[in-house]
Length: 303
Ligand code: R5P
Image 1: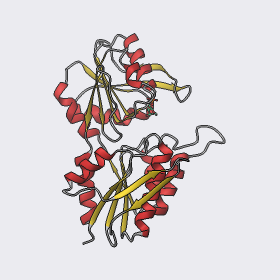
Image 2 (image 1 turned 90 degrees about the vertical axis):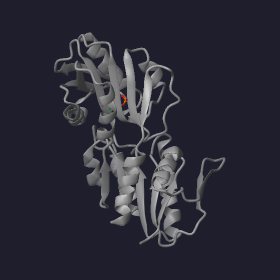
Image 3 (image 1 turned 180 degrees about the vertical axis):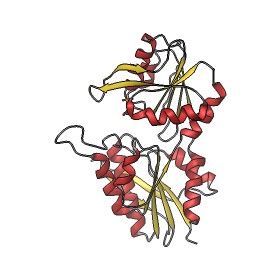
Image 4 (image 1 turned 45 degrees about the vertical axis):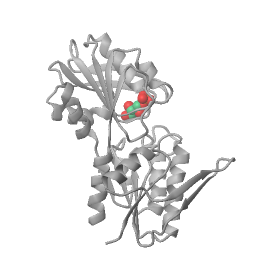
């Protein structure tokens, strides 16, 4: 059987290292240098001739640089003789540009998929913004979900008055999954995006009065979606004891500080991207993807 070798880009070394240890190995030796003009140089420093190689790299901010590192690593590994290359992408940047909202727009998620298909034999991804993205690839995609892991962690602080809430129509299916796993009712918000930073919630469907919402989404970026949902839930008399859950916690532009102005008891996210240096409130709990990813790699390596 081909030897298994794991490399990491610079996006989330802690997670890559944890996945490697779970698999009983260490990360492969490579270097990623940045030149003064921002160019990136990637070098593999070991013999990987004939190896089954996995490159761990979430394409989180700075998205373009992390994506290029991944592509350059793939090129370096191909040239060094890897027999099979798998991209392990715990967070897929540009996933939200998966269709044309307006005339003239690019479908960036497709462009990224096309580029990955030129270098990789397979992709492992976690909670893609839309499952349709899988169809952009003509190589096999293992699409993992962190929802069961996050739902398990929610079990330790379940109250009978909770309601799972989807902050927009795109999150309805995922909210239903949490609700089924936890045996809770579900409510839906109708969100309108005004810009990259600003969203408005126009309506909440479902009973939220005097209930403690668990607002679930695939990702928290600026926190704008969560904030407009929280404001609308509070207006509708929900109990001031909120939990926020997302597979990917990017927390850009002081999202956590802005969220701390609301009665949010806890925020649950995975380590698909590096955890934030969090303010004391709200408390952020990080659930590791290391076992989920290691198990997927183990299965692919023997298959
Ligand atoms: C959008 O459809 C996504 O599912 C999230 O709701 C959104 O991207 C979160 O972004 P932000 O935190 O910036 O509102």
